[in-house]
Image (cartoon, rainbow, N blue to C red):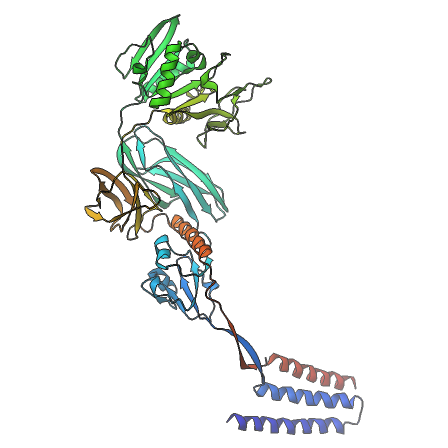
Amino acid sequence: MQANWTYIVLTLCVLQAAVFAWQEYRRVNKRNLTLRMLAVIAAVAALACIALPIGYTGNVAKMAKHKTILLTDGFNDDSLSAVDSNIVTTEVNVKQAYPRAKLINSTDELSRNNQLHIYGYGLSRAGLLELDSLPFIFHPASLPGGVSHISWSNHLKAGDAMQVQGVYNNPSSKKVKLVLKGLNTGLDSVTLAPKAQTTFNLSTVPKTTGKIVFTLHADTSLQGYIPVEITSTEPLKVLMLSASPDFETRFLKNWLTQNGYAVALRAAISKNKYNSEYINIDKLSLERLSTQTLGKFDVVMGDLSVFSSLSPGETDALKQQVADKGLGLIVRSDSAGKASWLQKQFAVDKPSGKEPAPAQLIIDGKKSAVKLSYGPSHIIYQDGTLPLVKTTQGGVLSSSALFGSGKIIFTTLNNTFSWMLAGSKRDYTALWSALLSKAARKDNVVKNNVEFSGLPFVNHPVLLHVARGKASPITVNGQTVASVQNADIPFEYNAMYWPPSAGWQNMEENGRLSAWYAYAENNWKAVQAADKISATKKYAGEHKITDIVTKQIHQKVRIEVPKIYFYILLLAACTFLWVEAKLS
C-alpha cells in the first residue's frame, strides 16, 4: 500500500512539473527562464516531499539501565516527563494526586537493577533504613511555608519560663503573625517578614502544673502542638545580702515575695550587726554564714561590696558551697575597687564620657519591650563565660561562668526597678527569672531521660533513646518494648515503638514513670518536610551511584525529516514565481 502511494505521488508530481515547465517555456518573455524552470521544479518537489514520508537512518544513544522514579509528598508534576514510565510511590495521597504512579507497599520492592530517582520531600529516617544502602539520585522539592524547625523544653519546673524557638519559612508576600496559645489564650506573639526564613523566640511562664499542651498558630493556621510537663517543686530559696537600703534590693525582694520564692534578707546596720527578714521561709540565724546555713539556700545574691566584706570564714564557706554543692551566686557590680575572686572572669569596662541613652536589652535571646537606662559599664567577654543579657550593640551586661559544680552570675545592672516604675513588669520578670533559673542549685533527682531522633508521630516508628544505669524492661502504654544497648554509649538503650494514637504516651522503666507525646500526622507539616529533605540529602550524599553505571548503546533507527522545511521551500518557490510574473 505504501509503495503504491509513493508511485502515485511521484507520477502526479512528474506530470505537474512537465505541465508547469511547458507553461513557463511558452511565455513570450524569455527573461529569467532558467530560474523560473528551477522554481517550478522546486515547488513540485516540495509538494512531493510533503505528501511522502521523507527520512534517513541515524544512530541514537540509549541507556542500558532502566529508570525508576519514586514519588514522595511535595513532588512537582512539571519535573516529570511524559516518557517516564516506571513511576512508583508508597504514599496513598501521592497516588491520588498522580494516578500514573504505581502504589507499592514499601521501598523493599524497588529493584537494584534500575537507576532510582526520588522526587519530592524524600523519605523519613525509617524509610531510608529500609533502602538498605540502595543508592539513588534525589530531586528535592522546595521547602513549604510554615514552621520548618522547632524546639522547646518538654520538662519544666513550676515558675520556669518556657522558651519556644524555631525557624519560620514564609514564601508569601505578606507578613505572618506567629502566636503561642494556651487554653485558647494568646500568650506571646511575633510578626515575621514576607519572603524570608526568620528565626523566632516565644516565651511564657506557665501558671499551672501537670501535663499541658500549648499550640502554635501562624495567623489562623495551626502549626502544631507543644506538649510540656510541668512539675511542682519546692519554692526556690534565695538569700539576699545588702550593705545598705536601696531601691533595687527593695523592688527585687517584693517581686520575689509576690512570685512565691522563699526569701531571707540580711541587711547590715553597723559593723557585725545585721537586720534579718524572712518571707515564706522559717527563721534561722544569719549572723554568721556557715556551710550549714548556706546549704539551706539555692541562690545567694548581693552587691560585690557585700561579698567582698565577708569574713574569711564566711568566704571559705561560700566558696565550698558553690564549688562542691552547686550553690548559685548572683553578684551585682558596684563601685567597690577591692579585688574579689568573684570578679576573676568578669572584667568590667567603665568608659568615660556621655552615658548611653536608654535602649532595649536582649534578655536570653529576646528583646525587651521597654527601654532601660543601663549605664556606661559593661562586662568584657572572656572564654568560659556565657552572656545572658546584652545591649542591641552587643555589649554584655550580665554573664555566667561555672565555679566547680555551681554558677556565678555577674551583672552590671543596678536599676532594673525602673521597669517596675514604668509598668513593665513583664521585662522585669523575664530578666530576673532568667538570672535565677540559670544560677539556681540543681537537684540530683534521677529521672527517665528520653530523647528522640525527631518528633514522634502516630503510626510511624519512633526510636527512643533511654538513658539508664542498667538493663531493665521498658513498657510503653503497658506494652513491653524490646531495647538494645548502644555500642558507643553503654548507659543508653534504644527501643523502637509505633504509637497507635496521638497524645501522651506513658512509659515505665526501672520503676520510674515518665510520659512523652506522639503527634498527629497533620502536625508540624513543614517540620516533617524539612526533616525528610535533610535526611534524604544526607543519605544520597553518603550513597552515591557508583556501582550502577549507565552505559550508552548506539542503535540505528529511521529519523523523519520535519515537514516544515518543505513548506518553506514551497512558499519560497511560489513567491518567486509570483513576484517575477508581476515585474515582467
